Image (cartoon, rainbow, N blue to C red; front, side, top):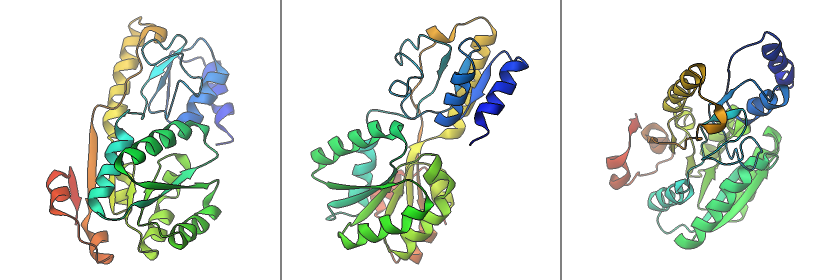
Length: 252
């Protein structure tokens, strides 16, 4: 991560015609390196509050692309978790408290929880050394399930988080399919492969003369629900048939 400014500066000095980025740290490094070369976001948490664009409809600068944020996503995830563990109302939320871009996601989740009559317990982590403490707190406070908010930190250490969820016997819902593929019980979120494919259309339009300032930022159009039956069996946990019926993929 510490090399990102150096790498972004190298691209600007070449120079390149377009910079394709991934998550917020790479977007920020590219933004700090140039205000003229077009930048395409592969996925961002909250590009408006992070200062990457003026608005989703009219970005207004040299940055456009896609965002992970979807207005109904928090409510959908909480409803899935409620269906997964009916009767459990206290939900722990593991999130990177050092990432200000996640504040919007957390606010949306809190609002959705109130509607669904669920009690959320946010557990902030600033690094991998905080994960064990977070799980211990969740267990001590009687959390019946866990939501893991996706970002660079939790994604990088997803195998460790999955291991802790398993050892804690904590049913957990994750934000991206990669977590379920790493052994997570259930994951629901945008299809990143599809989002990066869509990024190519932004690059194409820009190379044909379109201005990033006038290309609206896109929100996710496709969502995947993955269920890891192998993990469910290891936890002696029964997945409701209603969830299995709507799953995009079941890992056995």
